[in-house]
Amino acid sequence: MMQYSILESRSWLQLKVFMNLPDETNWKERLNCYFGILSFLRPILTNKQLIDTFFFSQYGPEDYALEPETIYEKKLQVLPTNKISYIRIRIHPMEEKRIVVIDSVTRSLTDQALVLGFEILNKYDARGDLGYRYGKRDDDTIDDEATINFIKYWDSGCRYILSVLNDSREFRRNVDVWGIPHLLNNAIGSFLRLPSYCPRCGGRLWLLTTPIEISEVSIKKAPVFPIYCQDCELMMVCPSNI
Image (tube, rainbow, N blue to C red; front, side, top):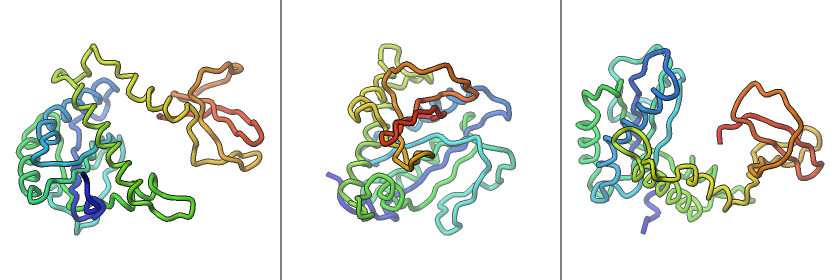
């Protein structure tokens, strides 16, 4: 069982792995690089003797951004000038395994063709980040138990992703990958509350993921979803990356 120490920022490590991609690349090349890096990090991340919690996301392409100087365990020697894509992995090591994790990650990522470079940061404010976004109550206080529950949720999702990822840099063909977000979306209720408000009445907006009939619309970006206001029944469409 995870303890409240997981909400202490100094108990975490962050790993930023910069993907070695040409300036002009397509989505398939980016995905292959992303899955390839995850594949050879998988033995470390899933080693429960070393790590009790981890989760990851892909970012970019975007400008390289410096972190506060005091939190670097390892920093790039030559800073990128072009836009970069990278994987940010948050890692909560088992007690007294922090140095072993750093050494293992360093050996795994060094001299890999898919890796432009990597950085290691010595803290992550899970409470200020995930707690503020997913553990807040209506009185604006952060519920630590709710925050830890979200950490467990993200950790389990990333473990599942690694478990169905082939070494060939794609998901196993007999796995219903679409079912991963689809089932959770259904469990939420198929209406996702958005952080934005209705331009007509100020009510909360909701994103609809159930099939509905809509009039023909001009779409310049994709993917696109219908947005609905429950108060005044305004409906519109907007692009979203859900």
